[in-house]
Image 1: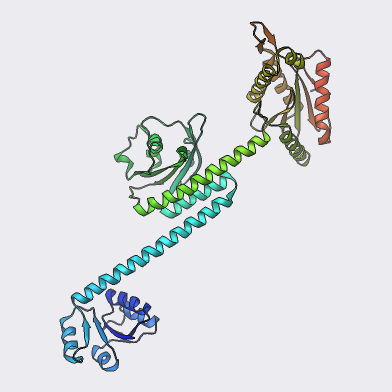
Image 2: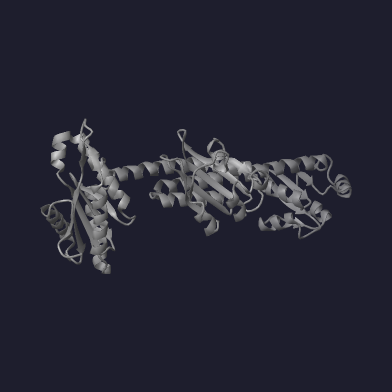
Length: 453
């Protein structure tokens, strides 16, 4: 084992001390410095390594094979040369500078390795969280929070592209004013706008200072919010654009190559998670959607009605149900075939979708029957909606097959409400159905209730 005496406990001596202390083949017998508060002295004390403030005492007291002099002092060098045994190795001057640089390089590499390991551990943790997140809101929050934390960005957002119309929708934003968020919920990319620039690139778009690249007239919202620097990372899966991850700062900022590299790795994980989530949501939607009419199916209707009537009973709120049936649909099918009949069903479903509210549930009950659940809605209001739908359908004329002759389409509707018509949620469908058949008996193309609305 080589015994080393270090002269000088400044930054250089402290760095050498830490490096040598890790090497099992080396033993530091002592470190010497007149300044008892020098960083190397503190490190030595912490590691139970002897210290000395007097060079003469250290040379006399300790046994060593090599002296490392990092003081740069000629006096110290001359003293060592005159008082150490002939042949004793003294590393100083250029040798100690070279050693210091080697130590610094090693420290930098160790720090770089440690940082890289921490970043990869963080990315792995994020990937695990994304895999188990399940819901889209949770996935978006993990992605944006992680990106902001990894880059120390004060603001950011995630926007998702609608495949049907090419519009971008902001699904999550952090660090911005509510005014900025409310005016940036959905937009169509402009030909020469920032969004188009990001989407057209396979690499991150980095803007150090927007005042040098974006005009206030082009994007006034960014200027009003005080945003000064932006990174936009396209989220792409198999050449398909899913959206964009934006990170923002309110001062000019150079995002480092390391930060961009980390963001690209995060974006890869994020894109896979979003794509998986979208496929899952589409699959779930297919399971509850009627394929022909693209409104909810009977199973979803049953589950929703059960939940809404339970909620209505608990909170003493009304819930209404509209049942409707296409008049003479069987004869239409018999005369023109099921393909034309399916067209009629789609037309009716489109009118229903246009008239319902976001809180309502429209579904295909079966065959040519449709239904609408209206939460927190009185029988009077439900009757008004039913009449509106009936009136709009009454204006529809469908061409007969291979003919210019137009045939009218009408529907009969029944309305029932909880608790007016029944306090048993299982009977609400029966009551609405009875009202619908009352409309049929009354001559069709009517809206009926069992009791006055």
